[in-house]
Image (cartoon, one colour):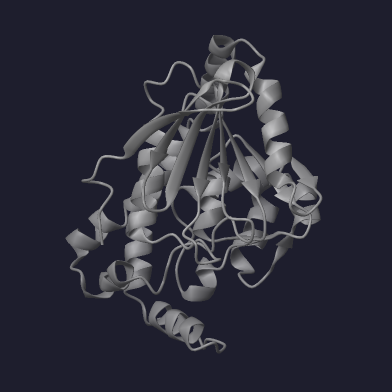
Length: 294
């Protein structure tokens, strides 16, 4: 499989019929970037779609989404980025069936720790973007999908969509620095409820009530609503918006690195447990796991 980490994205431009503005398209296997949208061309759209109906986060998908976020580092024109999945799914989370991902069980600790940095690298890249980021969530958003969503500035969700954090049910811990981000959004009790009760589906209305998402809309309209919010942001002074985001993020996340510096090692430790092996085998075998605390 082609690795986007070593292959430069293909960039082309086209003229729009209605606005006569230039749009750029950055294409990789799973990610498409459209720039030059909205007021003064200040909105960009990042579309993540593996074409499989579930949008699982394989290692290649993690790399491509990370590269997409980093592609905005020197972009002084774009002030808002809308991230959307497919019409049926934002993301099913980490791809447990991916060959590279499954190879983790045979990695030595050093190699495993390096491989486990793919997820935190993704969420950090999206959180650190200077642009305001808005997630449009339809269908389901699970595990790593939730980790990505809470790294964004705003989230808009279709009313029939749901969130779920199944990591503990697979004998793992929720990592990618997601716990601090969820804690800031919904507080300690709701964070424990969302993460520890791994089988619990969090409906769109519950997510809104908890503070996990900022807006709930009719099914199929999350992207439209996200774009409307993006237009409002794009009309504000770009420099003031960027500086305000930076200040809020620095104050909010000042202790996150300290609180979650052992994320990768905790995940690595959990991945060597019998419970993790049982959790994954039960998931793939579509049965209830039997955990024994070892």
